[in-house]
Length: 124
Image (cartoon, rainbow, N blue to C red; front, top):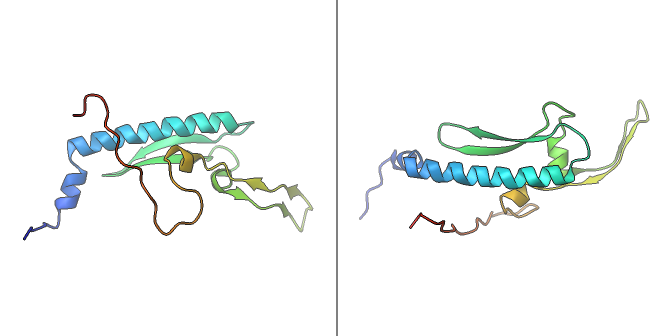
């Protein structure tokens, strides 16, 4: 019988090799996301950022400098008319920039399928 220690998963996650692979994959996803964002950008301030926590790495679609529309860019939006001003915004389909860059499925799925690891040159 195998004995699993409570901190084993954290120790594995913090392993230098594991962190190097996570960093490399994060940069790959961010690069693909940046290409997609530039391809669709007409105007605006949205950008792709990378953040690193204690263990995890994150690719972020940020629109903090602009209209704060990152969620609408990713998932789309319904048309809207402001009842007070009458100002209208048209509906927009989502671009799914992060989903596509990370090869994740679009839409609500109970399970996310992660593609198998690809071997890289020099990684035996």
